[in-house]
Length: 82
Image 1 (cartoon, one colour):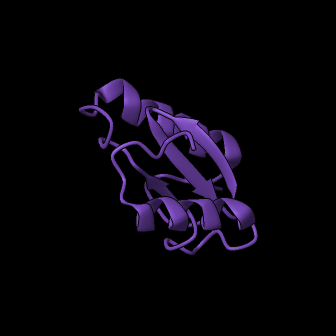
Image 2: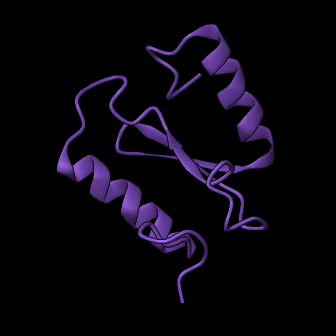
């Protein structure tokens, strides 16, 4: 399972379950989970594994921000951007 190195079995199972009902994409060495039907849910719209496989760089954070912005989800505030 991509994006799961360094995670416990429970964390990998949770990530795979979240992928089943979320749009999941990889950015900056992490998995970005997004549920457009629930844009205000921080529990459902989140970044998993950032900094787990390797130290986080500014480029990694920028990649996550770009992916979320391209999807219409605002990184600085919960929910959809205007």
